[in-house]
Every structure is written in structure tokens, then in C-alpha cells.
Image (cartoon, rainbow, N blue to C red; front, side, top):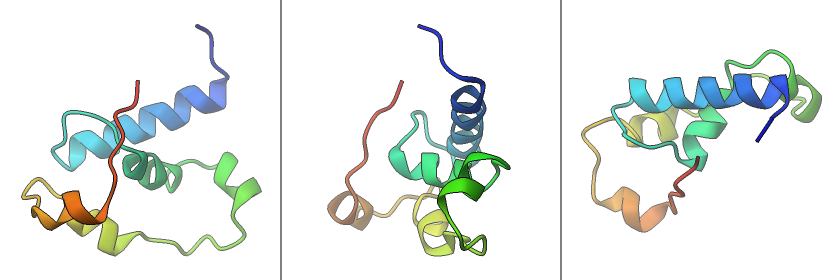
Length: 78
């Protein structure tokens, strides 16, 4: 399957975010964090570029708290 260049870049950033946080799969939240590194697509979608997702990033660190499972629905990506 062939994807657009933008999708490939966004997938790469999402994968990097998941690896940095110690996860072995990409969730939709890693996708959001990956969008922060992307210079093209988020600028078209979001007007506010000051999003840091700090709380989410802290919850996704390798030392996962069990409360994350109850509060967030994680989805396995490609």
C-alpha cells in the first residue's frame, strides 16, 4: 500500500515518540505527540501551536500507571 509523503513522515514521528516513551506499539496518543514534530499538516489543522501534551506525555512514560488503561483507550496502529 502506498501512502502520501506527509503520512509517512507523521508515521515516522509517531513511531519515534512511542520508542522514546518505551512502548512497543504506536497508539493514537503517540500519533498526537508525533504531530508536534511535523511542520506541515498540524499547521493546516490546528491554529494553536503551543500544545505540549505534557500531561499525556508524562502518563505515557515507560513506568505506566495502571490508571492509564482505565482513562485512555489505546489503539494498536500499523
